Image 1 (cartoon, one colour):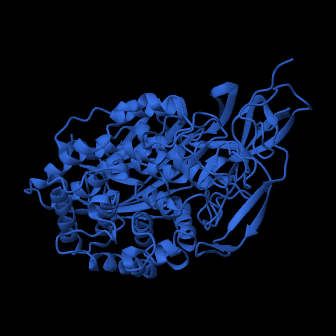
Image 2: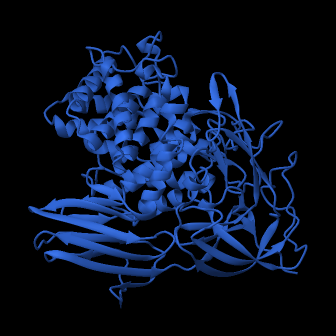
Image 3: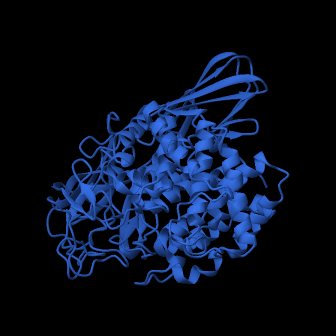
Length: 614
């Protein structure tokens, strides 16, 4: 089975509307400036410095490169090239490229090889740099020789992320179809790599123990493993991802489509954390799974994570972020004593430059750019509107140049205008994915009963306009422990908590925190102990502003009837809500209150009970 759809590159697809504004915010924020302010990128061993020489520069480039090219930002493209030039300069004659320093190759965790090979592939797709195929070829041929001779083996992170190398290997196979060593390397990686199907029992009862088998980032990366590897391995696709997803979701799923992991799997309590690295890696897995299978469940799961979990765990200006977010998060100040997290420290939920650990600082930047690259995908006979965010794509079918532009404020509003511009008449097919929650679907003003995937073809020369609208009904969904969450379409809604941000500037271990890339303590200032009084919800819409996920000016709101209750704090804490309220009995009169999109919140209550009837 070959990919059902293929991903476009930044040369073919461009963001528009709110998506472009979000990317510009990222470019002007931390991810767009790490090479200027953070020693682990600015002074990395990857470019001849003395700071971290393993995953952080590749992680950063994995998001920075597509961001630069999607925005056509010449300064950013030049900065990316400077890093790539330096990395290539240090490639040895045998192909090895990683800056292992004094660490023998045998003891250097070769996860870095897998990661830099992916980054070089991304750079090649964006830039078309003709040096990269040969660099990649020699890098991965050397990797094959080291593994096949037994000089190195997969261990630790490399063993548990073996499938990440297939991003580069699949590209190499297209460029060098006659080289058998590529398939041999693929087999070696799978043989030495971790078999996640053997670990599922460990996911059912989260422990206060750090294990690679339950590490949340490993697990969300793993979901794409069969999709990216099966063709090169000559194996049948079996939808392994779905079987493993169901176990993860049943025992560790959250209201916003992520899994708890702080830093390893943590159960279903709304006060456990979800690591930011896992959010962006889960999105990437879903993007590739949808491209490979064409199964809309992966696109719908992608939307839920992207439009809720990602924006909520990064500040509006994208200069600061959390290591872990909590679904019910009433305060983000340092926790003393034993934190509620299973393997993280008491500062992991705080916003800062590198709270708890720096991997998310380097890695979070890939989330929005790769989502933008997944807006449209290519089918054999046409174009697929996969994630309906404002964007445009250019392609050529049977010699006819075609441009498709989507004007929309989705997911905040459910109206879409497609402009299909064709040089000549073309039988190119445009497919538009319609989500499961769509109601009252209409095309060009006419009701349409069919859902799933709409198809349009036989476009005349010039511009054709297609208008699509549908509705989404806000509703209450059940959560574990007698709790509920509110959803409307792909958006989850939460009760926002007013907050006070206290800035902290300091230097530690040679790393400066200075505004705007400083740390913050965020203190909750408004009442949060509420339950749903009924399920009546009223939706109102506003314009999508310069900051799409704004807490002060959210593009959409829900009015709900809430009732105060005696919720209480988790035992031993004064800034952590109980995982389940102490009582569901009303302590006052019900009142109308405003819920806003989860992605617009910093402090919030998302899962809440319904009041106990008298």
